[in-house]
Image (cartoon, rainbow, N blue to C red; front, side, top):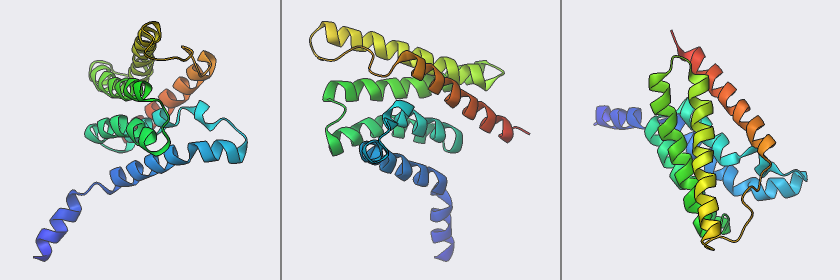
Length: 170
């Protein structure tokens, strides 16, 4: 009996659970943190930040789970992002995971793989958002976070992931 219980607990990815819970708590607290700190915390792309942490510290499967659940969780808890944008963000983050693993398997260096996966997933996101705006499904501006800030965050995330994954290599 004790062996079965130990086996079950060994299969539970504690790191994944901690990152998932932290991600959801962080997403939940971003509006409060922004207000409390008088800083626009949302500019650091909190969902992508948590996704990059998941890519480094958990599994591919868990990264997909977070990519889909964070926008949904945020929508359920706060009503933000709006319904259509929730789907766009979930698709973008999932595409980011897919492209990262696809490119990382084909490139020797992980930095261009994560950088390109972020840039390409953002390009698809903006193309789809533009289409939804033109179809009057969404009433918003195309770019909410300045592109320069997005580029800086993409470089920061790409560098972190590359450095952390390089440390794992033998």
